Amino acid sequence: MDYPSAWVPRDAISEVAPAVDPAAVASEGAIFNANDGWVDLPSVISVLRREFEIFGGTVIEDAGRCVPVVENGRATAVRTGAGGVLPADAVVVAAGPQSPGVLRDIDVTISDDSPAAFVAFTQPLDHGLSTVLNTPLVAIRPTVDGGLAMDSGWSERSITVDDGGTTHVADQVIERLLAEATKVLAAHPSLELDHIGMGEKPIPGDGEPCIGAIDSVSGLYVAFSHSGATQGLLMGALIAAEVIDGSIDPLTEPFRPGRLTA
Image (tube, rainbow, N blue to C red):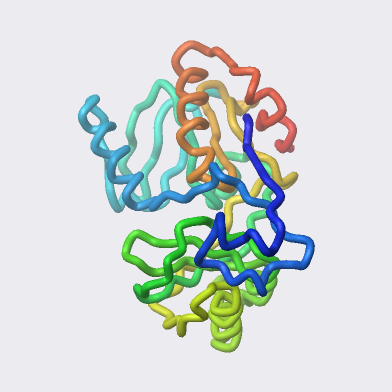
């Protein structure tokens, strides 16, 4: 897949990203990806749900933890958290970072390296940013309500998880993340935190996507990967084709679940 990139000298940054302070860019310049962008995932999910229902699909909300039912080596249904059983010709496990745990419930192990992560969202402001920024100390993108969303590697590593599995991030980490974003933006705005989105980032054990049939259980498939906004639509189409007629797209060959199962 082509992903056009251009090296932009520091003194030309304002031409491609006027909302960025050139002084915050390394002296050697930066890489500009003209086709890079972002989507609002709740909006995408709403659109996909409407289309799914138009074609006769049914969305069951608040079903609790759902687990495939396996009989004689084949996935035959899904058992919901409420105890209901939904018969199925095929079952796809696409539960984000919970996917390995769901599979463990039926004695299928997929290596997992999903870390705790968070994104900080600011209150709306006049920031002028239209591009996605990936800088050494903060990654920033606009949000649909006029705010900014941001995270970083160093702030992610600061997360602690208590014995009960609850994740925590210190106030000073959030304050520094907002400060780093302020430095990058040309107007150096005062950023006010609106809320934090926290959870696990779905990453398979080797860091690469995991998509396709589970060899040990007929009729069972998995789609497990980071960057769902980027890969989700394509992965959905590829795994749907595999479920329907067994066709395996060459794109998925390096990413089959068998390499991660034990």
